[in-house]
Image 1 (spheres, rainbow, N blue to C red):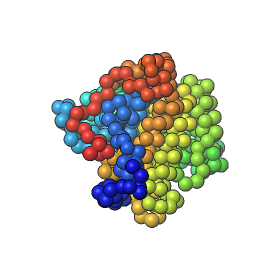
Image 2: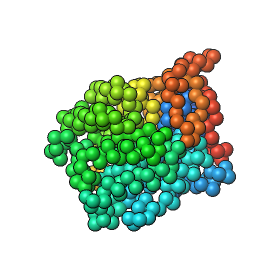
Image 3: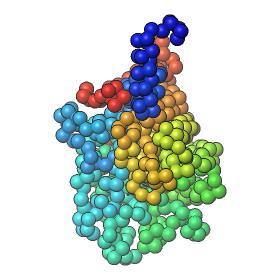
Length: 435
Ligand code: XIL
């Protein structure tokens, strides 16, 4: 049928469809024109794709928002819980394992939220990252008046023994020390003038790692930092200082197995490149893994409506993860949150100049997959070959010798195979894109 001999009824139908499409959000329109719907559950989830490619993918979570009863009885209807359960095979607490939330008073601990997350992860068959044991921020208010040069070593050691000891055998990796490098503080060793440095001296880092190794010998001990991704002068300098710190630790036989690259990226301006790639390869030579620990993409400086933000964010996910996940010693990537409904980027100063909310994560504030979701999934699929994936057991170390083995599936050599191994996807879950 050509446009010329269309019946009146066809024209009315076409006009109605076009009008309806124009009123729809961009993601629904593009799905309609493409003629398919994006399934994000089961074998189509980030979790399943990561598993099929020998990776752990996950997100920072707020344990208070998770429906534990629903997960244990298989009746989850809450969309936040559904997304965390279906998309992640590793989780980390966004705040609940930091000193401030864990330590209401010098002599007491509050593990309520941290325990909730551990229980959730165990029910959902997920691994857990611990974040973090030693940082200059989010210290409890009593710390300033209570910690002294005389008691600081003991405070740090007791905290690490108590916290890492409590979850011994259940943590895939611990961020033992977070953000200890800041070249702008002007010290020769590149270390930040943090309260820990002031109270204990530079060997607080050795102390933290050695104590963490005693408390949980199975966890991969990680140094985690930000602003080490770009090839700008400042970030290259900081990345170099982090590498030197790791070299010093290794030279002293301090137990450290991984470096976390936080990856709070910006869509506007320079993008990560060869400097980070070289850094990852240097760490590999030393036997260390690199984890993408806190990825999100800030769109400050990108003009336009939500669609423009989404495209820019997706491009960063595609390029960045395409680059870093292609490095064999990068087996884990986490985003800092799972939906735009709960991103720290909308909590404060990082808001965009036009006042529009940030859209930095794979799901938007209505729990629908964003273009970043597809970019992330494509990066997982293309950066790594398929593996014979056995679902990692909670509490067990990932056997990296089993990773990166090509997985042959008859008729689908190009990476379209259904991943081996079960991935829990509650029957009740209906993707917003399927509705
Ligand atoms: C952030 C949380 O997302 C916020 O909710 C909180 O108010 C401040 O901390 N680097 C880190 C994370 O290592 O712990 C930070 O998390 C983000 C930057």
